[in-house]
Image (cartoon, rainbow, N blue to C red; front, side, top):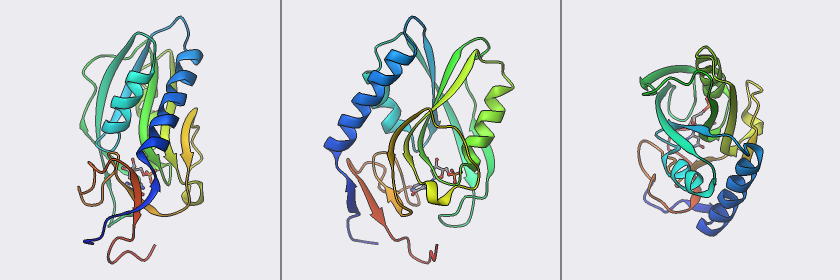
Length: 178
Ligand code: IMP
């Protein structure tokens, strides 16, 4: 695990796509304000860039989530480690996710936030691995569709490493046969 991750998406490709997503979101919510819900920790870099690409009045909230699983596999059992600090009732909520893999985490978050009676709730995900989907969840704004590989960088980690890598690359985590 000493080698650098193999580049999949360069910093320039990501920056261009994030600008496009920001423009799409700005257009979709014209005349309204939006609450971005950044799902920690993986989405922190994406959410910071995306927020600056959106030309609307907005608020940022952080939702700390721990997904239990073994190694690189998600179990779908989600623990909230940090909750929103303000109510979202009547608000237009946009969940900002780093990656949708099995879809279990997002399904859980949509159910959870839905109980707080937002005006609307949509999803913006940077990456989607459709080949691994267990649950079909709506992604309203999507950066990139990728093949089934474990990716790191631009906020995404393997065992808390690589979050500060400026690009997105692939690794083969040791001991993982998936
Ligand atoms: P899901 O519940 O399987 O959709 O997984 C969602 C979460 O698992 C993401 O928000 C990530 O934190 C993590 N995850 C899934 N795939 C990857 C990956 O390839 N690299 C890093 N984290 C991942």
